[in-house]
Image 1: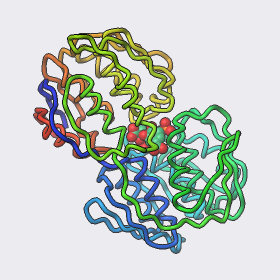
Image 2: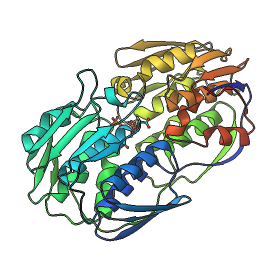
Image 3: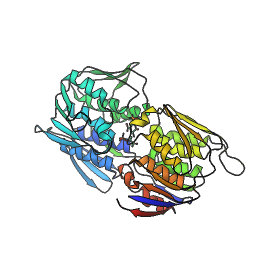
Image 4: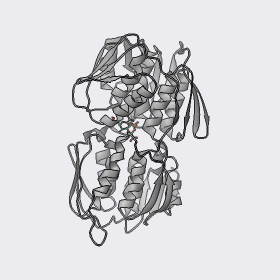
Length: 416
Ligand SMILES: O=C(O)C1=C[C@@H](OP(=O)(O)O)[C@@H](O)[C@H](O)C1
Ligand SMILES: C=C(OP(=O)(O)O)C(=O)O
């Protein structure tokens, strides 16, 4: 779908969808629990649908009524081969590979978009040492992936700067094994708040893990307890509207937890530290180390364009491994509408502009690029055409209708 956004500030109230990260984790914990869990306030994004669908294949009974789900944990893991479709969701893929291995499932894992090309090296290296056969079907892509065997406990060595999702996946899976396990980091952990979020939920589910100087210790023989949980609002999604506010819009964002452990809550602090001129333009530039907040980078780049001084975002090399090469995609998208953004090896350098000048920009099929362009359009002197605007379905299917409710003008010009 391609659409044209008319320039204009936003105003009104938005109820922010539930945290995608929290929802993936809660669903998986619930599927592994002995008994029935109830989760409320789930979003109906494609990524969450992928996790629900895959967990159902793995034997969990999940019934959805509106934004609530009832999950009866897996009683008997299936013995016949199953297919797990992860859609485009890196979290679904990297969380469920070790969980399926711990349950001893024989499965084929499939996915679409850029997912077959996002790294799985740590699993391809470590799981075969622990009793798992894990084999991509093709040479030029990692999916479809064929997996069988029963995971054994022990020591897993993981790089910390490719994806924290490996740690989350193993933290979720290893309590199911009889013996104790350890995760040892071979490079400093990035996206650390996401792993903290996993550890917090595991504690809630009755399977605590222990942080060690090297990584984590995970006692075996854990029993997941059922959960009763309302998923809190998503700071990564709120960041689009909060940034629009920093650029002149007036959006009240409802549904966020004030004591949230989401790392992307950092957006509030970054925006609070901005200095404004008497004319209400941003006087300062941004200097952001983004290793722990990768998902904020696209929208922070929009903000940086409209800062009064040059900005830099660094510590963000992992952004090249997301739904797009996000450093290349956001630079190209914003430059196409009047921005001055250049890539560095691990980030972006941004020169100030007074306003975007409109034009046509490609989301590269990436939801966070599409939503960032919508924020840029609020401060453009001419319309912004977004190619691939439907990408928002991955995490925030109601984004365009919410944007319109806030007074944004969106013309769909093609459904392709
Ligand atoms: O654990 C999670 O929920 C996530 C971890 C992050 O990925 P990386 O750890 O690969 O950076 C983040 O980008 C992703 O959107 C969600
Ligand atoms: C990178 C993202 O998600 P995932 O890794 O789960 O595909 C995202 O939502 O920006």
